Image (tube, rainbow, N blue to C red):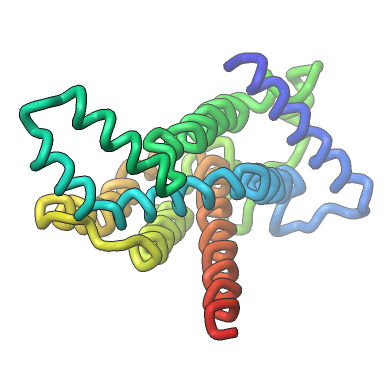
Length: 236
């Protein structure tokens, strides 16, 4: 994780220095904050193909619910045949039962690595750790995004709203869960998780909320655009 954090820190440094080369730094938004935004966009675009593939795989898996249930009922006393028949079904439908794991694991690894970078940019971005103290780190009303947002209804609220919008779009593009318990769990996640994150994020570094919130917005836009293209293709 240390190696990945250092690597991502160097990318963030490259973006930061590229912005410095453009010209005078805006007074309201520091180049460091803009670097985090651009870094989030870059990471999201890199991992997006895998995430979209994972979502399609999940949709296919849910659509097979009735067939899976039929096989489970038929071979419930024969686990070996049950597993064999399920794997046969997945193969016929060109579905990987573990297809959604790799993108999720990759995304989590990047998130934790970036968490380390944003919490301690001096360690991962610069050879001279004192340089981080010489640069501006403000973002509009926040004087230093390495610390929490002093306005609790600022980035924490915006981040929570972006999470809710993302969950709403994701649920609208995914078939309903096959049973009532899973549907209730999905609804709880959709509404309760953003509320919980709003309160938890009061003490998190504002830069982290900026990174995650930007990523949510990018994914919302990509999914909305991809859905529009798919709809246009179906109409033709």
